[in-house]
Image (cartoon, rainbow, N blue to C red; front, top):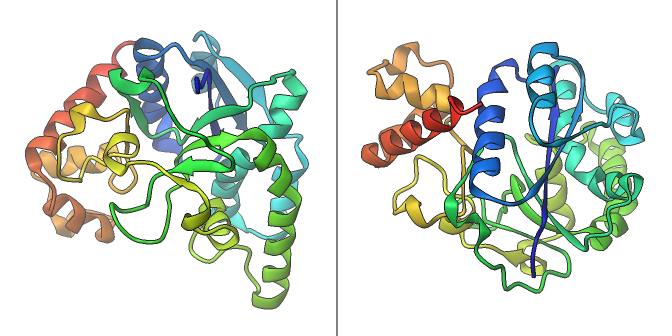
Length: 271
């Protein structure tokens, strides 16, 4: 199976310090793959939007899609801003239909990734639902930050999945506990029903141990680039805002951490 397109989703009104991550993702994807890039967005950031317009990618303003407007009924303030970016992957089938895209499968990734030179290796997978790696190398929770999506299947679960969340909200007073679409998808379909991708190959996190050079995608799920930079430069735990992330970096292979950050910086200066 040949995946030809990759989709990103982002709300410019969400986390404001992700511009560099976006540039690294786009630059590494352009350099290391032949994927057609589709960048879904809502909100406004003229400087970043101007940069994206200068790249050989397809920009899609999805602010008018009903799901993103409906989320205001279930999230508030900062959580709503994040939700309007995170849930965009659920509307990929609608976007494909609007654009006349007929691919059966597409790749979706979060914007905090690096595409490696191995990304374009053949993908011999029969994916009838979707494929992604586990959140951790072992466990029962899968990470939706890197997904190969069967468009027809994703379209079929759109309404049932949202209905299940609405019922959950009516009963419990929240749409997703401690997360967004990842929580909803894990609750709706278990890991035993999907295709599980190799964690090191598809979803290698900088703080993990092992050889990342054979990975297809490095995904900063956990400490982001700015956190890693702070740690590598000798920053103290006391001055670090995100306390839960510090132990991940302390347990990491520091050589890996440094090498991946250097790779990140190399893709930042391309565009």
